[in-house]
Length: 320
Ligand code: A3D
Image 1: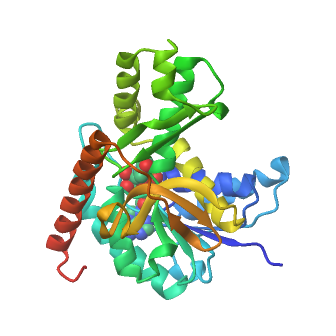
Image 2: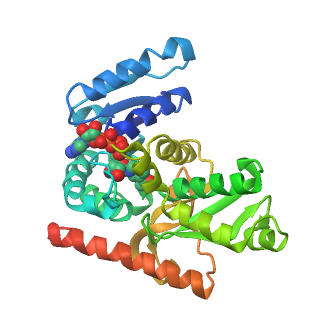
């Protein structure tokens, strides 16, 4: 059987890291696409030359021609511009919306059967726009944010509790922005919920609140440290986890920006929720019960996403 084909639209910091990880994990053959002539070709060749040492079997190709993504099984989209210090994700809206238009049309023409994972910010609005422009089925288009936000939460919790990250489960709901909702009640250490760990004296409520806030600010913390771009190692790893779940039909339960139609009282909008990812793409959206406070925070986050989607429609009247 031929290897799966993975098209990476955008060959910048995240795109290059995605290509490296996909090759190391032998998820399939990789096509790196970018509009900056030379960048995708150079990165593809550089990673291919790591093959003899790593011993992976994967071909890598760099291109500026959409025809080369033909028949891709997975497309991961990072095309656009990242944040600079002082910018919010929402400041990227206008410029990245135009990019989503060209990418969506490219995918529609050349890879209409792909499972598409969008990473470009502002995430929830861009994945919505990408779905509109590509016209692909909703279950085949999603956004990566929840896996990354949850990984950040898990990392900070494992530091606080001095336990392995493997034993910390956590998830984050809502839009990928300042209003995201790291769920304390549904996050655990080996099944023990965080509120119980506070009662057991493992941490204090104040420290937990600070970790929740650090998770919300996780992207900005890295932007501030780097000074010239945003995070890319962990974002790439998170998207690869989702791509692998699809390609290997793993039925992983992962939070991501999915089209929510019916659950949570929402009518057809992209926002971060727990999902099941398998060969059917987003196979299920999981509706969990929310406390009054969680519901209020989730609704605030939903409203923020709705505002961005309306702004997109204001820029391109043909959308939606
Ligand atoms: P960067 O290294 O600048 O790479 C972006 C690439 O996109 C560049 O190589 C550009 O040449 C290319 N590009 C621009 N326009 C087009 C186009 N029309 N078609 C194809 N390629 C194009 O950025 P990055 O890789 O660091 O980040 C990429 C995106 O991911 C940004 O929008 C970030 O804000 C976003 N991001 C999202 C998360 C999430 O958790 C959702 C995390 C980190 C970054």
